Image 1 (cartoon, helix red, strand yellow):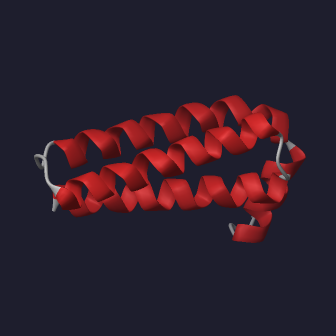
Image 2 (cartoon, one colour; image 1 turned 60 degrees about the vertical axis):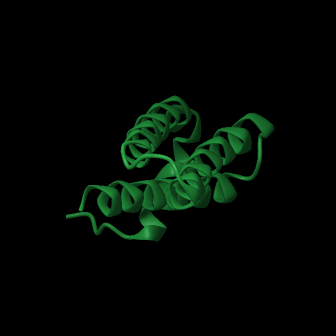
Amino acid sequence: MKVLSIKSLQEEFEYDYYMYIPLTIILNSCIGSIAAMTVLAQGTGIIPGIELTLCVSLCMGYNAALLAGSNKKIAFWMLAISLVANLLLILITLL
């Protein structure tokens, strides 16, 4: 049985990097759009504006890192941070 750890996920991402690029772009964009929708459902104000800026910046940062051809390790960590932050935004705004 394979152990699920950050190191094994990172090695898998780096090994099949070109396969994961389109999959993670779609995943990150879908999670980011759901987070943006839940943030905008709160209404307009300074706090939702900051949350929306964070959400969009993280999603665009990961996509820009892929397009710029950055290091695979940097791309993996940007994906992880983006997914975790957007999932937390979704949970915070729905609760």
